[in-house]
Amino acid sequence: MDNTSDWKRNQSKSSTKCRDKVPTVAVGDAPFVRASTEESHTASKSNNAVVMALIRQRLNEGNRKFGREMPLDGTYRLQDALEEALDLSIYLSAKIIELKTEEMKYVNRNRKS
Image (cartoon, rainbow, N blue to C red; front, side, top):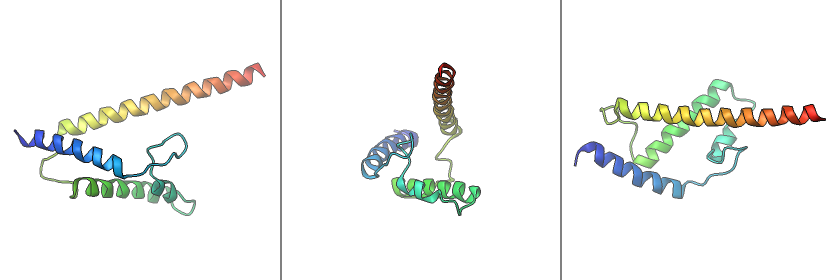
């Protein structure tokens, strides 16, 4: 079995373990947002500081999940990045459609009033 297959199998096992152990809280309509993320959004922090805190949190979560820092040894291929980017496009598209649908409901409701 090649390293990629081993990595995918281990990633799948780690992902399941991590999801089971990390509590989630409903923050707005994004139930995947951790409580610590919500707490990091304070008025005293700049937008950049909030973004950096989210990135730092995500890296730390990866460190805990995989037991190491982000590897720079070619473990992750361009194909992995492409798949992640495509997933992001799907999630964002779905959210935009949801928001536009809600907006249209609101507009239509107000027109009838």
